[in-house]
Length: 454
Image (cartoon, rainbow, N blue to C red; front, side):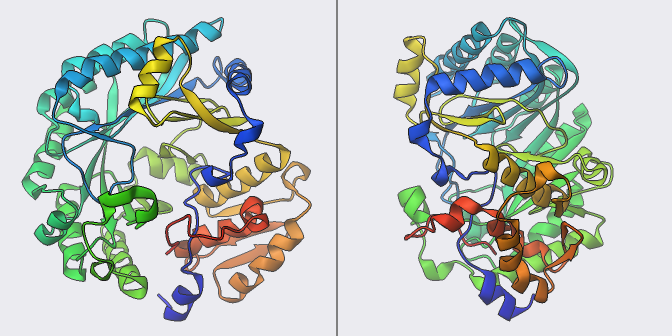
């Protein structure tokens, strides 16, 4: 990568799992009644046609991984399982009581935390409990995140029997030194074992999550991790940039010194070497930090123009309505976002009072919806267009003027009322999206709020 371009564009910026990004939500213009109103509107418009998605946050982990920014509760006490599942099902039932017809569930994703902290039997209670008042869509897709150290063959078989066909395993890096720094002791044999079990049982999409830029990580570590990963042939890969944001994540990311973390060109070289190796083994880039084999549904969705991105990450299909269940989960009706309380105790307390545990959100205005569409297009298709009147917005000319330097640097190219991100521009996709982020441009933060873009 061009060092000059890296120095120019490696600035703090959002990852754009939503627009507006969470720091720019107008919480004073939002309340629970607004969320329920937009939830009902989205449900009416989409339930019978495309169905709805559920993201279920399962926050418990037995130990703290110091690279992780998720909302989690560290405990080895598994008596926490039953009360939490009961609370999630209570929350779901409150949503079901709002609408007049049975929800049709197209997607379920179990995230965490550590979903496989929960026993196979309790996960079965959870999934079966969802369908007491709901139906499966004919083309449903259920997925979960599995921790290689505690995902048992029983977990995999039980979830497969419940309809799950996609699983992603958190790998990060196989270096002993890196694993010690991030408090994630996870030998290759554990990952190989669960990957082969999943394939044997019949999972059709197996993913591995890797991270570059971790403390003490060197080129040889990335090469070794990629080589071991290739030997298992996962169907899809996430190759994430480590987001070092200790001002958000607190002491969990202060277990190593700043000097221990690869930076700038050194960090990006780790990615370029890893990406080159993936390309050589027939993995295709299908979105920011994501790669897939040609047989995987993510690649097929990318090639057909149907790839979608939301708070669950990249998805091979889109539903207008995504409901987040569990502590800290975020819901999306397309017209508004709503986030559950981050406190487990408050989550239980609100549900015990028969109240949805939403504590903040944002109602999207007309401009937000247009900008959101452009950012989604770039994140999922590496291009966008404002040729149609409904995709045009008043400040587009200012945006294009701001992008002129990126065009001159070869990161994008313009057509008639359209923009395409070049191969050289893909590492800078967050920067390109920032040019469209009108809320960020109008109210630039005084302190660092986001991780570095490259």
